[in-house]
Amino acid sequence: MEQTKLQFLMHYFAVMNVVIIGTGNVAAVISTMIKATQHKLLQVAGRNILKAEALASSAGAEASSLDSVRTDADLYIIAVADTALPEIAQKLHVAGVVAHTAGAVTKDILANASAEYGVLYPLQSLKANLNDLPPVPFLIDGNNNKAITKITAFAGSVSHQVAIADDGKRLKLHTAAVFVNNFTNYLFAVTSDFCKKEGVDFSLLFPLMEETVRRLRTHDPADVQTGPAIRNDLLTISRHLQVLANYPLMSELYSLFTERIRGYWDRSKG
Amino acid sequence: MEQTKLQFLMHYFAVMNVVIIGTGNVAAVISTMIKATQHKLLQVAGRNILKAEALASSAGAEASSLDSVRTDADLYIIAVADTALPEIAQKLHVAGVVAHTAGAVTKDILANASAEYGVLYPLQSLKANLNDLPPVPFLIDGNNNKAITKITAFAGSVSHQVAIADDGKRLKLHTAAVFVNNFTNYLFAVTSDFCKKEGVDFSLLFPLMEETVRRLRTHDPADVQTGPAIRNDLLTISRHLQVLANYPLMSELYSLFTERIRGYWDRSKG
Image (cartoon, rainbow over all chains, first blue to last red):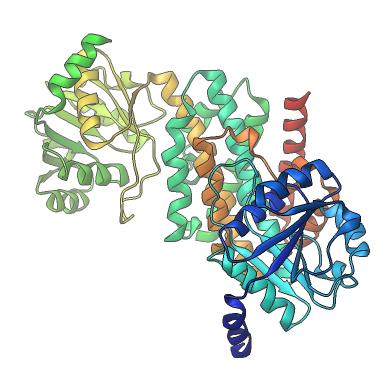
């Protein structure tokens, strides 16, 4: 551990020549991040050469097809769809460190691409077209110390929050992320629809939504649950279900969550 | 509308003598809010006299039982459980404006308490013991202009976000709040449990959760959905379900939301 820290510090300020393979949201965000660092983006390689050119030109790099990836970079970041990873990993043979950015794919898919390989997984919901970049924690893995050190150093130069996580831990956090982002955002989407249809202002709920997340920094979510379900307030529950009478999908969710919440906190108390 | 605005301005800086009936979370938060205003909290009345005394003494007010509520206040705020409202409303007969704080109860439950009555509903999840107060939008209603003006003036002196909403709109927003706060917090609670049991750090997800909410100020939630369900990424979905094999309640939620998300965005696109 001490040795890793020392290596980390030694590499922290080192300039890296970087190649990004991929042209989607994660590739775009990482190329934007690189601009603010000492590192140099040499090349953006992509199946879609027009997209690669667009991304490369905005970052002052060269564009290439997947068949013409340079071999002189220090770090190769493969940010492509999980399904495209195996073929790209098979084609690539380089001396630099190779990292993919996938939450649910083993690092060993890169075993033949380089002697040093690993993972640089951004634990954030990234969209290329969002104007200001949110904080992005990175989960790092590598097949040996050199890979871990190099990828950690790169991550540390673009993010304040870097953690080591092996395949298993990364997959668990990836699964957890689906609950706290994807499922939560789905609840927001159906609620926003409902508000539009009913002519009430969804944005009045923003302070509540922000508070729901904010208080997690100081409170366990199990300790701050409020609402009719945990109070076992059957009258309010029935009024809400009446409001939702024309929204069968929301009614079903309402009943399911109400039942779950009552069971969850009963069990905790018991 | 213009007349209401004028009246609003006229009353905005008026000092009000306030009585709070109730000693729970909402009563505590409103008494704290009053301290920062020009208004004077005269009395806190509660069924539980010890709780009323605790709250009153921290606010420099007098405490009383429900049978000794003063009759000389400008504004009476009834912040009690929905089930306790009818009895309290029946007992109270005053000249000042009377408002309850319930999201799912009609204002007309107060019809016999005063000639001017209405609602002062905080659209926020309030806990008395949270250290710093979040922003609290208030939904206002009243049986006539005088009631609306008075309650709006009070709300405007303790909050930057005040909106008029009748019984129907308030109940709709109350229902929506259950989805974006109660159900979301339940997802956070089960995910936090999962992370504890699996030995991964739940707090690594905070930036993701904060971003999920933050981007709603500039993006419709339907436009920023990410994750395996909307990508129809069956391999990742099956890996996640494997991770959740020992968590039947989470597995069930995972399958339900995955199905829902696929259906929702298919329909939107179609």
